[in-house]
Image (cartoon, rainbow, N blue to C red; front, top):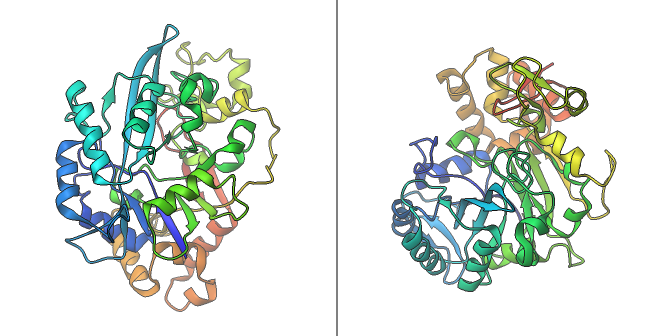
Length: 408
């Protein structure tokens, strides 16, 4: 059965995250979006973990997946968190974010007890840990070999394994003797699979896409689609992610992608100077901003080109397909020429369409346009058509500023 997974979101206990995020609202949003399995997010935070233990029940004994007791839904939760490792390595401060999935509540409890004795895990849903990456991975696997741990938004300048400001140039530099326990990586919003195919070292890893949502409406903006035989369980998801590159039958189907140009760190630039540029211009400028004459924030596209060992357009034999999308409320907002996607008019039309057609992903990707035209306004229908075709004008993002998309 085809299942849409969003393995990386946050709770209201993470900085700059919506207070509307709760288990019921997450499940309700996933129903509207068409997401079947979603991360709990932030299981290291004591208050959120208390809510998780009280509000979720296992789908069946030993499944490692959970459902909301408050809201009757088919949406399943997987125990997940993101951690921020900040430490000094080879005279350089490293800032690396990792995603972690856990097989059950017991392993999370043991991990939290260990971390709580040594670090302040109460201050943020994404805890800051003064541990080196291999030390953290070793800790997880000492507790349970069934943990999944992998780099979050792998190219982001400030907080990622390959980030231009604080990262490394190879996975081995970062994870050292624990590199063999890294089975996957998350592309992040500012890169897509085609960009990551240029790195041959990634061929042995499973490429995952997730939303890293800080608010409900961003859930599912990126996701991973897999095929699960029978009833879903943590173990089946674990096996698909870990062993996907070794088995003949591919259970990973495709990923759902943000347009990378819309990501906050796609190009190089300076937000305060309103200046951005492509890597070639950065090189000509010596990576110095022509406005303030300080070093540019080097973005994702530049780092991909710097570390790639393959030309643009290269596609590995084992590469998955992917589909780029723009969220339905953004399309409605654009058609209505409204600045805020949360406006009452946009949300009213969004909810009407979801009630008619089941989910956002059904509307954006699956249903034939002829099936939609009786209930969808011609302008919105044209917007959906143009998004499917990639008929867009994109102003790329840079230095923490999202890019902008305009439907032609």
